[in-house]
Image (tube, rainbow, N blue to C red):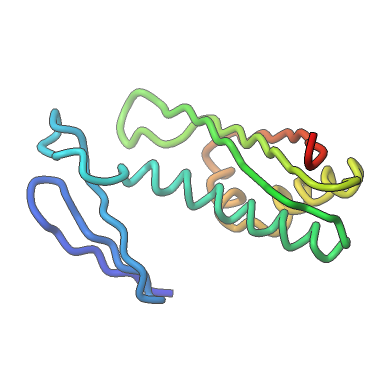
Length: 140
């Protein structure tokens, strides 16, 4: 896996993934940024959310669950002193579908957290990571 980060100005950068996708990262005006993109630590948190959502959806599809939507809401706390790592991260899954099995959703979330999501397992080395979920019946 590769990535390339190109400085634009101030604290603005364009990050390009090895698969050819780009995203702008920037900082707040207080740090010399223009608030033109996500902060690098936000990107890290979003990456974890994307990784775990990917796993949960894949596991639920393989379990033949009729999922119509999946949202992961993340909240995180960071320590005060540099390097200001994450100390706590909570992932709240909102899984919508038709006749979803609570057992299957719980297992998908647990498998992602404990076995498959490399991002959350890696971040779990410095942060306490918790998760929960809710199931919403489609059309309700």
